[in-house]
Image 1 (cartoon, rainbow over the protein chains, first blue to last red):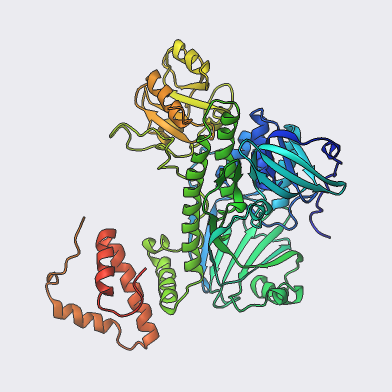
Image 2: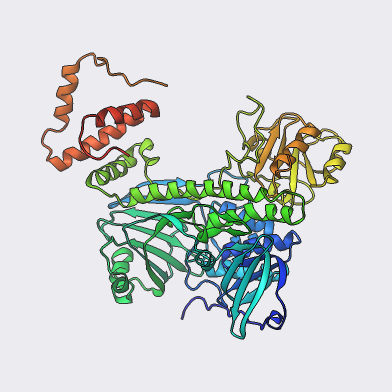
Length: 543
Length: 70
């Protein structure tokens, strides 16, 4: 008996079949994690959104399972972080083994004072179900069994042709978000391609259900006795499901290796001859590191796997897709409101292409370590693993996947640079917010207070007139005073545990300006209303 | 930028060379290759300076035939 039965979402005959094409502000193609996150975020920002999906259920098989802290923080902003965090298996420790012994272990979140763990492991179908439920709550128009069969970009809109079980119809989208995965239909229909490389290696994923008292840790073996010459990765998921990922080499036969009777001896060698398990799902994959040259093509914007692909080592696929959506939606909402020029969307392209390149670089390096391509590369790899047991420096060289962290938008044109020598620490312009516990109304974590538009955090109070001016601006900016020495005119919190001041290298007077996607875009040592207004103008291409 | 030292810098060059060769005593080619790799990694970490390491990598590759280094 499988641990999970996929829901079937009801297809409804669209009224549009019998009507002229209706224009929508935004149509999202693909109800996977990225499309759903984009849709929920749009809906929460008051933008009506239609989601088209050719299927009528969630992911078949567990697929993406490692969701990073930043992804949970994005989901918290969208109102479904708690469900995913609770259902998922939380972890922060990883162990790396070489041959028959542990080489070293690492801790991705060694400090206290964070709401979310470094990672949760959760089957993609559970993740998507949580998002579908939240999308419904927020009023997203979800259309299942709606397959896009035509895309025609025009100057002022995109014509979309959609096939349903009842026939074909057309819609117009002011903006089309293509989040339809690695084999993107929209990309194909527009004659666009991705560039990069395929890696000559094959991996077997086996999801098994078993009772085990292995702890919830990421375990990675290089050249273990039970699978000599190759690597193995083990992750715990929800519902007593475990992901085992066996490297097979390029010559393996994918059809053959998927057979349960081929998988059984591998699992018995690893887990013991008497191991009892049920095989839930198996797949043999190769992977690629590639991306589209540009993610924005006029009114069509690509996000997630449709735009870029990486190897799974490092969990940089789905997690980077979440960041794509997070980056895009506030910009699109401002453009739709007429509060920012369309070129703000080009900064989605600039920022997320840079992030994709960083992910591809990390992923390629991990792959070169896991699958050495020459004899000498293998010798160095094994030497690093040998040294790692004894010598701390070598542990930093071991690369079993550099696990996803929030993109650092260091070179973004939306940033306002620090005054020279103003800060020696803390998150500079382009960094994602670092969470910390706070005491006060509106939430007990910093990120609870950074959940809609621009937000200025001030360490100490600022004048009531400034709070008012910022709140009433064309692009409003909320304010939050931390540890105000006098009663603060607006929202305020206390940094009771001093994590906040420490993490932000703050002293009285310090201000941080956050974008709606919780990235720092400017910071100062003293409050200056004009400087804040200029930074917001810059961060929205209104300068 | 720090510069790779290529002028004499070893006080007792013959002692060093003897010990370098001595490290490999009794090893077959495969074991020697492993030993060399560990040595390079240990020394690289000791040097630490990426500029110096890059110059050393380039200097080592100089005059060796083959495709250009990536």
